[in-house]
Amino acid sequence: MAVVLNVLTRGFRKLITTTGLRDHSSLTDELINNMDKKATWDRFYSENTRKATHFTNFEWFFGFDAIRDFIMPVLYSRPTSDTLLHVLDMGCGTSALGPSVYRESVVPVQVTCADISPIAVRLMQEHTDTKSVQPQNISSNLDFRELDCTQLHKHYISESLDLILDKGTIDALLRSRDGGIKASQVLKQSLAALRFSGSLLQFSDEDPDSRMLWLEREAQEPGLMAANVGVQEVGELRGVTYYCYQVSPHPAAQ
Ligand SMILES: C[S@@+](CC[C@H](N)C(=O)[O-])C[C@H]1O[C@@H](n2cnc3c(N)ncnc32)[C@H](O)[C@@H]1O
Image 1 (cartoon, protein in one colour):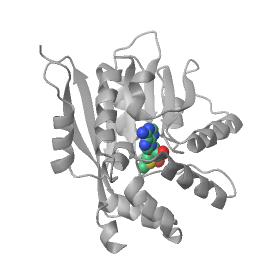
Image 2 (cartoon, helix red, strand yellow):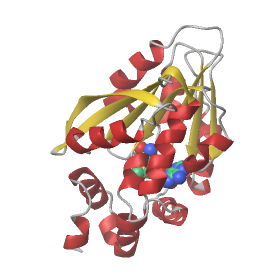
Image 3 (cartoon, helix red, strand yellow):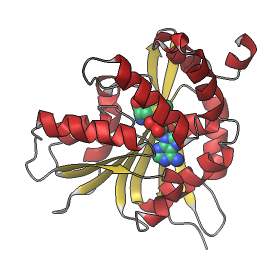
């Protein structure tokens, strides 16, 4: 087990050993190798629910409070218009990230929380139905959708989203045995779905030395796709340094 755990970076390893998952060694093994599989996440959210007496949001890495100052300025920097700004929390799980952006935004937003696991989506929908969150802007909307982000092009037309949030989703794909191609598909389709000047914000514990190289390579396709890529340090938590990667598409030179 120790050898296998070493394939995970420190943040993922810490997370898995601090969530009570050590009591479920077969689920831990499944997560280590198969975080790109729907069945793994269905099992993860089912087991979490079975153990709990009531719903609580499960946060990968950290919650909204730790990254509010990375998200809201990017949202507010979008050109103002009369229409809703479209925000997608991609691979939302049961995180409160999307609902927090919906609640806190003073500009009108359409926040969609999407996940491949119908169990996570149902839990989020049920929780929201019972809680009745009031947004700062009464025109804002929040919805939950079961969708596979490798198939984003079937759900969003090109240049239709303003902000995509990714907290741990592409990380999960990249760290799975067979997830590399899916991670690349998700990134490329995210960039196609974003408006120019929109952004993908990716929160990760992966070091910029490797993640920047991957993003810069995957986000460029001569004549087809181009993007600016940047990184900021979010800070250190439980001895692990986290980063916010910002990828913003722009028209490719012909
Ligand atoms: C590491 S968890 C992060 C969950 C959440 N973003 C958070 O911060 O707590 C990765 C999430 O991605 C979802 N996921 C994995 N592959 C996916 C895919 N192809 N499309 C949509 N969601 C996916 C999983 O179900 C899981 O909820």
